[in-house]
Image (cartoon, rainbow, N blue to C red; front, side, top):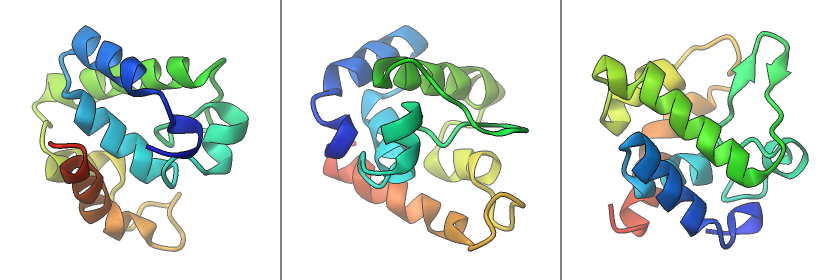
Length: 122
């Protein structure tokens, strides 16, 4: 993991244990969503998951808080609803054709997250 994600393995482990989600999957999503820790979202808002409100990107007090909130969101809105694979999560988390994806980057989500997941031993 690079950029602002450097050294955050423990935070992913803790969130994974707390919410029952593979920490490598959490880290892979964060790595993809933040350009491996280099995006403005993580640098200025501690937002590791591209989490949004109607007003735009959410802001968190620390990267660790951002990791915990992303994991909590995935547990409640995805895993608890039976969406547990990268492909199932993508259809809701980063759907192709979404209005907040004007340049069509969501079409790369499954491959990007999968590549990071495999690199982490997932």
